Image 1 (cartoon, rainbow, N blue to C red):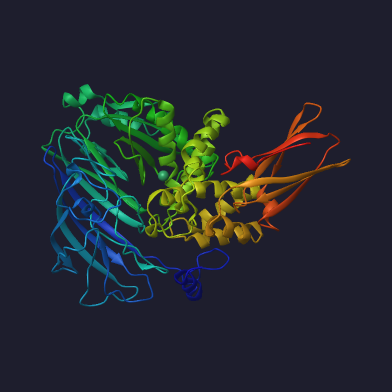
Image 2: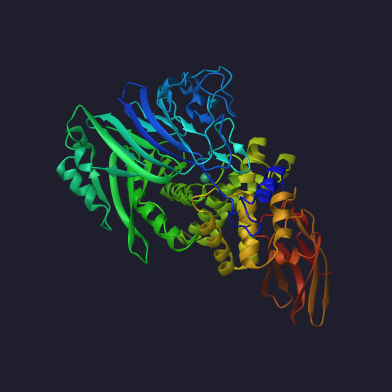
Length: 602
Ligand SMILES: [Zn+2]
């Protein structure tokens, strides 16, 4: 356990049973933002007021402001190169006030995506401060997680100055945003007004206030109907948009969205994207429905199915895995290039193959739970959200298609890249903070390696107990900031088992998967196979026995076979049949060296 986490237990902000401690706290902001985008003008202007509450036990003297879009500035530290079309002059801060007085904002050429904002008078515990910002930026021609989708379609994300997270174990989040690593956000309350020219539709996070102010009556009726119907409604067509029949015909329309207790707000806007919408019951007890919307250009043919795919995802995730009702009022699938999640929104590329489109949409929508509902620190512990989205992606995939096909996709996209690569980067422990990693080791630690770790734990505990532990973790920590230890300890607590032997070997050590059959002893009562765990991961596996009578049987072994001894296990199987050959089949737990997986009777 690193020293910062140990200190949190000492301060009792976190509890060793996996619950938030009696001194747990987190800070919060109330953001009131107005942003104006007038395509094809690439200048986006914003102003905001932030009321920031200090719930920490300490005074704040040097808060940190995140300016994510400075990733576009020439010279910004990045994990990737940048093309000419990606570069802009970044976020220009035009005016700042603090508690009603002008504040002199000092640009520092060596700071990019985060800036310190020293306070003359410290913000005391349980006090609040009010900061206002005016800023502008040029939206980048080449989009990544935000930017221009086409010359008249903008995707606005991470577009406003915000307080970084101050938490109880890491204090201020002073990590540079480098493009590969993701985010960490407080749960804030937002009122966001997006000003756009007439005939532009704005989609985004939160409840659209007074839709009657921005939509013409016929469109408004379809929009309203979409919240109660099982049908997919074409709220606005390309022809209607071109004829000026969709939005109110003011020179500028103000689209206002509100959301409370949410980590971020994101918007897409276009004057030619089509708009589909429907809804689905996400809570069978209360019959609550959630809206599913999609926004796309005409050539993106796969997007015609997106409301259907989205409804399926919301209903499946709500009722199966994680089996927690979708926590928001809507999900919008926006046609872009990012394959990226945002609260109540995803930005996905278009594919010829609709099976792949559905696969990506399901993954991104699954992120609703982790990181957003659960307040995960994705920058530092990305395996806590990508590992789960990847796990849900396999579980929903097995329900959507032939389970074998889903597992093939999982192995191909999520496991092979790790287990098939001998580079020592791949075996760096999953728990390593994300900002200390780049490259393949970073990606595989977050996605496949963590995901099959969760699935191995599911195999060990069985579905019922595993779900009970997962639900307890989600109940204890939703809308908060859990660390990996809060997760591990909750599973130990709720299962009533000390699972540290498993967590240590899967998440904290340099192990990989390589099992080997050393020898097999046959007796009248059956056979005993001696298996060496060369790689050290406590992975489940099947022993596949081919008998002399021509029959084949599988004997599944959960990770429990590795609890007593990490390196060796003897598996005894009772059978009257004589075996001809025996092999290890790890299934999705792919083996780095399959040459030692078979035994043939002499
Ligand atoms: Zn993901």
